[in-house]
Image (tube, rainbow, N blue to C red):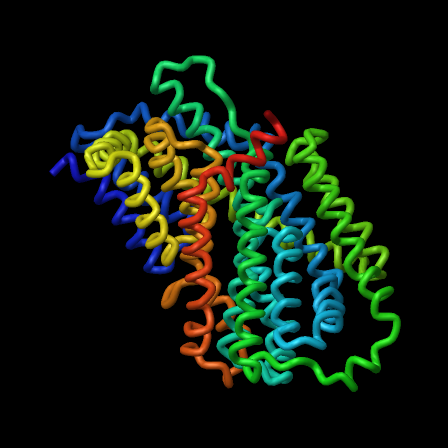
Length: 459
């Protein structure tokens, strides 16, 4: 019975989460409860809990994680300054004359918002509020409209500078060093968040191109599902290219500055995030959308999101310490190494588990709880850390799109009008799920899609 305690611990945590308790307190509380029972029965060494203060100090002194509140601030400020609304209107005018043009506009704006905010929920809700009524009014098939919005919103998982990639990069870096030490390599190589940003760039752009390709396919095969904006309406728009330049150039320059400074090696992710935060304030001032009231609202949202992230991280640290104290890491290692198919079988099982957990847990919980357990084992089998990080990110992105539990579907359902049924939302995301699975299979087959750019840039 004792050997199954790590499994019971994991199942117990998921059960408490499904009951609706706060994630951070559910993880920490479950861990402490099992630790207390183990100490009383003599099956758990309390020394493991003495490492909790060191874990918390490690979080406080982790410079990479400082990028999280800065990127959140940048994204919320860009959202409050109405950049998304202006971008969507401008892109719709640019592409509106062609069938499917509005869908292509939503995809491109979703990509830019993903690179700006990096938060899936914020992007899906923003796009749902801004673009869904317009698409329905233009005669778009509700399934196509909702599928496009959900898929574009989840690009925040994979398009850098994504918060998901910041957190995942930090965890993968620690797991990679641990896996090398376990193999007797005491001067381990390092993997940075910048490496993961570069690795995710080509797969992210592949997804965007595939989404646009699907919209073109629908426009050819089902033109009535994605009608063009009437020419007489477009003719009333003056100075379109100047308006497009004004709407596109500032946010693109800001994203380029943030990403370019990281990828070029001029700044760390934290330093680049601070540039992005200051740049978002300047953009809001340029659009005359900045005020003390706006700053207060942005700071409040940033504090709430950042507090949630770090509380989950602390709760996950306690949970993982108890899990290791019961020998859970050894149990998982034995399970994965004994699977048929070797490293391929182990990777397939981990991807399936992460995909299913994505129905119930947010990316933060999965990143902090599951990845630290499985990543060192997979990396010890010889997998590339950047490739593994990209595969996990796209896998989670696919999970968040998949009915009936995908988080993106819940976000959109919350802001969609009653005239759009849940069944139409489910139907709309199916083609995009297939696209993501194809891209995932392509990266699994050609790992260079994720690893070539970091090697080319950093050698």
